[in-house]
Amino acid sequence: TTASEEVAAALRIQIGDPVFKIGNKLKLHGRAVVYDQLWVSTAVFKGLTEKKFLERQSTIYDLYQREFGISVLRAQERARAILANRDIGRVLGLAPGMPVIEVHRTALTFGEKPVEYRISTINTQDYDYVSLISKRN
Image (cartoon, rainbow, N blue to C red):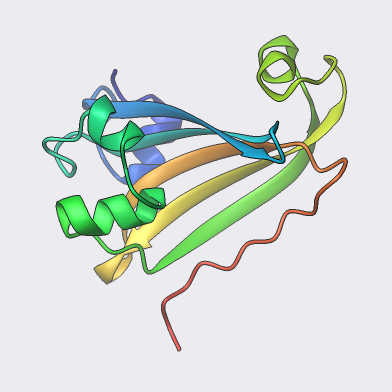
């Protein structure tokens, strides 16, 4: 796919540049709680395939480190409450209009270079959202 204005601005690439768009659903106790939509530049992640992504042994950021030598050092996040639309409701098993949290995250590597843009939609009815992403001491 190609970078929209929002994705291009977050990744500091040109609108229309090729990007990988990945959907990732996270479950807790068998129930979908988080739906991530993430974008990475094909120029930065040469050789990324669906198979590599799906068969990763650990976290997404561990895949970036092991396969591509890219360390995510920190992330900037912006969060807001929204109402689930029909698509998000279907993925998270919620009725449309139910409140969810939407988190926009830009993951950064050395030199404050953005390497991933992610929008996470989170059902916090039974769980809290906690984020700590930093390799700085």
